[in-house]
Length: 158
Image (tube, rainbow, N blue to C red; front, side, top):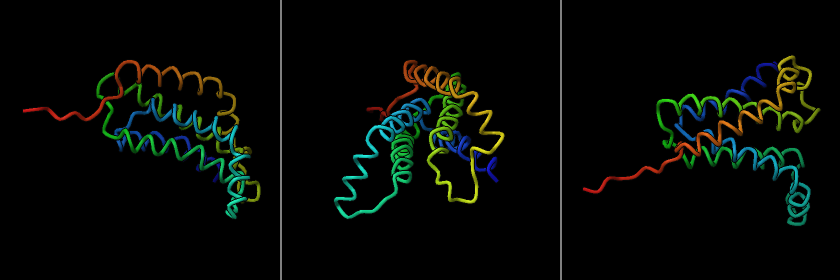
């Protein structure tokens, strides 16, 4: 069960990028931004929400802060990817985004659930490849962005 959940976390960004034809480079960068935000502002945001009488757990808030910018970015830049060599760059960036998603969310999942993602053999491999996932993800994301992987849908004037 835990291997299946980790597989879904890793492959979900690839599937979303492919079906929405979104820019995986921008998605990876949004995921990185969400992770940084979740580690730096989650405590203050939880305190603010508590003052507004909104009760939320810190782990669910952190997961939301990580996932929401990623999903919004993929939705907002849908139909913006190019074909050809960019497709391979996009796939690599999307797989790395999936790895980063699993690495950043797994520690936040409450231990009270029936499964522990850290006990999986896939988790051990993923954690061992953490530096490669982040480094290659950043490299391929920058390549996608720099080499023109982001384009607006422009209407031709007649």
